[in-house]
Length: 213
Image 1 (cartoon, rainbow, N blue to C red):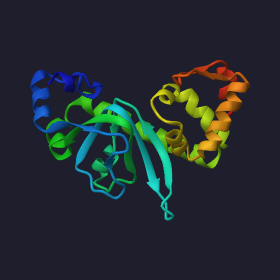
Image 2: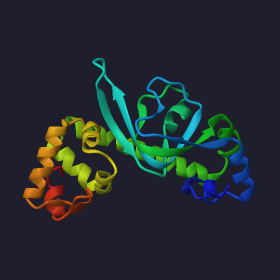
Image 3: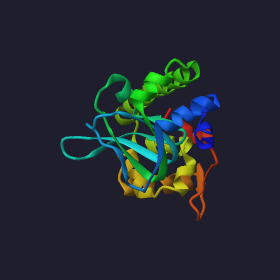
Image 4: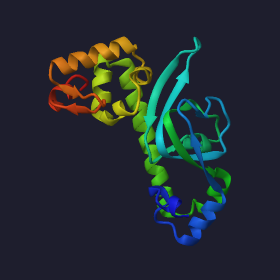
């Protein structure tokens, strides 16, 4: 029960409601590269990411992955498919191992959607998804490879010590060689430093931000 109440979405629930929520949900751990759900799969479960890093992507006609977004906890994942009763529009895969709280959506809707705190958190999450879509369009249609990498560094510097460069390259839809070459360039120009443990330190945030804004 304490674990559920530690999740911001449910932190204001009474102990009685936490127990009700506990009865319709369960925690599940996932390994690196394991799929949470596939594009085209029917929903029914509300997923709350509580640990790990999750990549959301679509697959084109050639079988290539088109990166959409990466989630870090805490985050609702795939909730729009549940609300619209539509198939998941993308695949969610773990970049590093993690854990998810899985909730029976039908029972959650029936028992909890009259709670204003939960409704507000869900509205906030859906608003973030609109921003994500806007960001994807901007990133894939406008930004250069260098700009995409610079933006990722500013927004997610800590991921470099937990996610391999080849995985980051896949997330950004750039080649590993392009990622390596750009990181070397940014270090040479003293925009960033990267130590032996892959901790990224931004030395000139104004300059690196200017690469994508």
